[in-house]
Image (cartoon, rainbow, N blue to C red; front, side):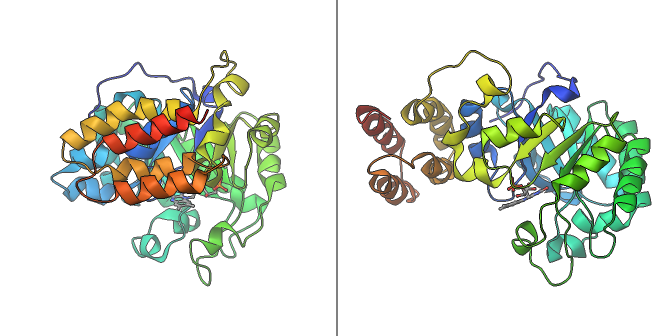
Length: 336
Ligand SMILES: Cc1cc2nc3c(=O)[nH]c(=O)nc-3n(C[C@H](O)[C@H](O)[C@H](O)COP(=O)(O)O)c2cc1C
């Protein structure tokens, strides 16, 4: 897969729905799958650390995406303005549509590198990073953050933080509507235990109507997203889209007003096959696609049997495309 320049879509508010960045989930294989389901939603990469882009000689592998993945935002992690500016330049040159800065990840590893959620405690550093990135590239710079961290968790602090980022040039804010505890909770607990507080994000939006503010956290259905969009500029969905991709097949018609097209699980898999074939030709493994396709096959009779077959047969290094073709055909024959 490689990228070519793409007509830039700088209409920030047009990304009413996006699929959240998720480590080990939203890789380029999942994104190709998700793109069969929604043509217009903004897709995010997993977090890529700016330092890794600086030192890795094979950085093309980190940056790589397929043309059909547009519109796509690269999520960067880091706290060094020089490295982030360099990474932002690389991302723009590679053809990304946007750059997102991670200020929400609470993992100890990320924290030990002084980035992710702990940056909510360092607004000046964040503002400096944004300013440098804005000076270096011409694509939008967006922020994905929490409501707060540890004891820095009140509405005044949140608003000041957002104001600092906005004054530095941040173009859009995605707020995961819960705080993070940097001590005492692991990343998974930090996505479930601190309560969701949509009302605090709403207060922020009410106080700063001119800013583009998206809500993230706990949105489980398309109808919940539609409700969210009555208040916020965008809705970002993570786990529910990853685990149940087929449930989101009406995004383009219900959110973006496109004509509704019939989509089936088998059709989606058939559309992925050319990408998987190319991937295998380049010595990739079928499992890299199949592990995400498994989540498509649910809520139908014999789902477990189909999944088991796909899983067992795709994991060997020698697995070939005939497995995907067979599963797609079986699903089609069964009316799915
Ligand atoms: C497995 C996993 C990995 C994640 N990795 C990232 C990441 O790399 N960057 C990020 O900003 N958020 C990451 N997140 C958080 C999600 O982007 C999102 O903010 C969170 O899951 C809440 O949204 P949801 O309730 O719709 O899932 C991750 C979440 C999960 C479940």
